[in-house]
Length: 225
Ligand SMILES: C[S@@+](CC[C@H](N)C(=O)[O-])C[C@H]1O[C@@H](n2cnc3c(N)ncnc32)[C@H](O)[C@@H]1O
Image 1 (cartoon, rainbow, N blue to C red):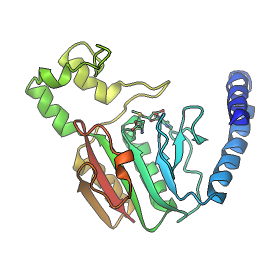
Image 2: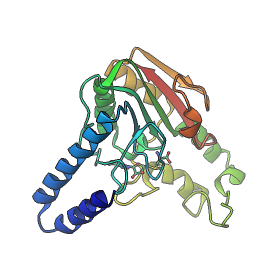
Image 3: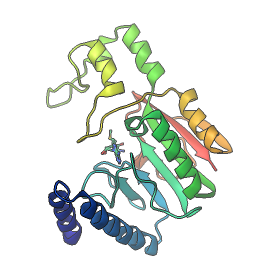
């Protein structure tokens, strides 16, 4: 872990002056870490895991200090064809353009084994739009225990728009919004044989309670290869 932190720091210092060298070092480190997890028998992936660590899952994110650091806006999944049994992607597919999201769903199809399952949770555009049109102040103006606003933006309009353009994590922010049909279309296009809407905690994946979150904003889709 200390070595990984050191490499991450070296890469961020080198990147501004020698971006090619920084990419080369990160690619070597990424390959080393993937090999380590595969050799330990890991076959589940948590895409865009953020700070969340889920036992049994390899966490991928652009943030440092995750299991495998990767910028999914330009890099494909670092796994072989048919090598994974489960891929989850919570509250993050909306951080990619629609075109890149479709490419990543094709990637998920490639790396899943036959009968492998992908579960995506994402903010529900229809549900949020209904609340916006109905001016649901109780929902939009929730506060956290610290007293801070739960949702970013000053007005209901700003708060609604933040799910399309806001919620920046470093250089990345929301870039698209989905309802069930538009998300299902990405998976059908990629060739998944079953694409289903699921309730919170309802899943083919064991221990899904560690992964499902934000049930008041998100819907869940499960796709079987
Ligand atoms: C709203 S957070 C969700 C984190 C976690 N999955 C959860 O459910 O709490 C979105 C995550 O997507 C990650 N992300 C955004 N753009 C990314 C990219 N280009 N490559 C990899 N991860 C990215 C962010 O770093 C962040 O951790």
